[in-house]
Amino acid sequence: MSVILGIDIGGSGIKGAPVDTRTGRLTAERHRIPTPEGAAPGDVKRVVAQLVEHFGLPGPVGVTFPGIVQRGHTLSAANVHPDWIGLDADSLFTDATGHDVHLINDADAAGLAEARFGAGQGETGTVLVLTFGTGIGSALIYGGTLVPNTELGHLWLRDKHAETWASDRARERDDLNWKQWSKRVSTYLQHLELLFSPDLFIIGGGVSKKAEKWQEHLQTERSRVVPAKLLNEAGIIGAAMMAAGSDPALAAVLDEPAASAPRKPRG
Image (cartoon, rainbow, N blue to C red; front, side, top):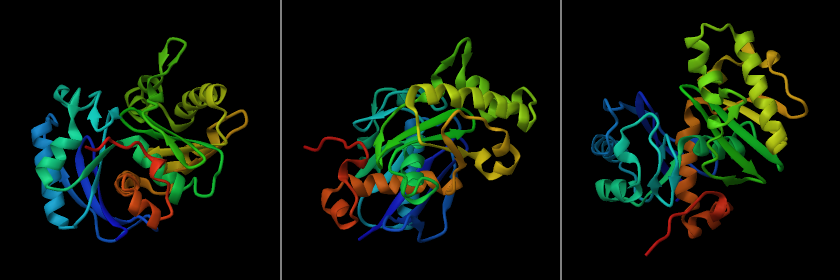
């Protein structure tokens, strides 16, 4: 069965939908529940359980998290409750839902989805997916394989912290027009070019819906730059892909390498 439930934990809402992981398409309308104030683990756990119950799908569940995820543990909590730090979140959600839950960083999930089904489809080289919103999320993909938890929004550009200076929140905070903001983003992209030499940058997050306002202003040395295609569905799709890819039998059916996303140890 290739239909897997994907759930995307965001700052204002937690969204879920079943995904056909063969095609990357949602098979039912998204269901959204507001993120509980403070986003404490116990409160978020209950919302995730509600979404699982709402759709009633069998099988594994993929869940995104806005922070570092390593072997199912959440290791950072920039925009959620500090109790997430060091938590075995895979087990928390698995126990709460009765399903085998697989956790992945939210930007990594969006990157997997864009690389396979979105703007990076067919790209065999190095792809950097960047999500511009409250901060800057990043996903590094090489040959279709994810290098997890890059957290490139936290790079420093001389005396500038990248996401504090060039995120969409920074654009609004500093009352920048799109051309002014694009100049900052161009500086950031050129720095990433020096470090990674990507063949392609994919610009996601909320700004991807307004590509006509910024795309012509971005300047890179050699990398192509395109807006993301999957928009608000990318995290849900990537979460479902993570859950599907963690199961070698299912991954074989989908013709997808089980190592395309980080796996948690079993037993």
